[in-house]
Amino acid sequence: MRHAPLLLVTGILLAALLLGILALVEARRARRLRERVLEVAGAAPVALAVPAPSIRMHETERSPLQLRLLRLVSFDPDLTEAEVIPWPLVAAISATGGLFATWRLSGMLGTPLAFVAGMLCTVLLARALFKWQKGRYQDAVIQQLPDALGLMLRAIRAGLPLAEAMRGIAQGGASPIREEFTRVVGEVAIGRPVDAALMRVYARTGLTEFSFLAVTLGLQAQTGGSLAETLETLADMVRKRVAMAKRAKALAAEGRMQAGMLFVLPFLAAAGMSFIQPFYLRTFIENPTGQRLALIGFGLMLLGLFTIRHLIRQAGRD
Image (tube, rainbow, N blue to C red; front, side):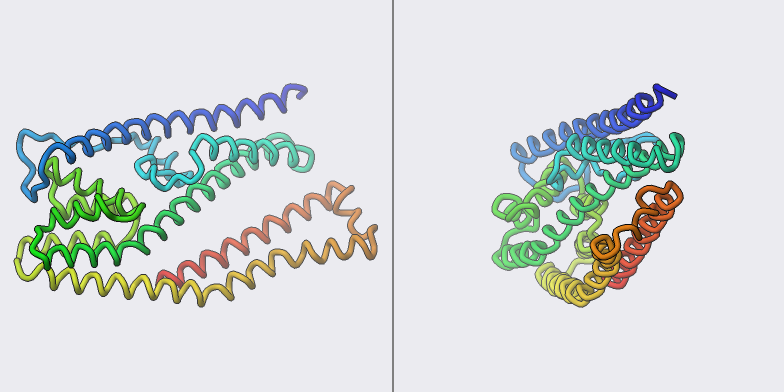
């Protein structure tokens, strides 16, 4: 048992190192593919054509284990533009949080349960950080999408083809919408259809508006009609969806505030009680049974907070 803390530390660090190596390999592979696409896009004219037989468009394949690990921590190596905190730093923060949780819980729950709790804390912390970064990136892209569609509409009404309209966004748009349309332009340059390139953006970012745009352009290319009117209708719909999302977020602010108050109130009550009657809290501080009860209560509070947050987000999406 003397080596139990060392084994715990080694296990958590090895798990974090394995996850980091897998993410690094996938990120480097995606970065090389993106550089090749952008290089071709800068050297060749953009054309809306059927993929040529001589062009082999390689899809990045991942093993089921890699997909499960990446999905577990909500990390997408293809979405490097969303990184506010580099993934090695996220892995280090998560591993540090897991080690701290293991150290604090080893005396309350025992070594095996503390190790499981530390691993769970590591995964949850990494997942929370990656989801926060992705959500921040999605909000930035969706706020710029209506203006990008308006720019495409004006370019098409001026007589430019769709490919040149998207190239204008890729060259003169604001970040991060510029990077997404740069990907689309690069993929179209190597022979991928526009709707397929936009569907890949939807699969990467998770924004439904890109799937709307892909389906709309695909149907328009097959059935014909006025592209300007189609884009105008789509831009108006996206603008209304963005405005509705802002309104839903404003209406949900009261619920988020109430959830925060419910979470903070027990700690404020405990702090006040410690000044009035300090011996009331000794049971939870000095007694192992009280420590376990306090830990269970804290876990139930976190569960309630996450449940309220999930309900608020689901109501906003609906």
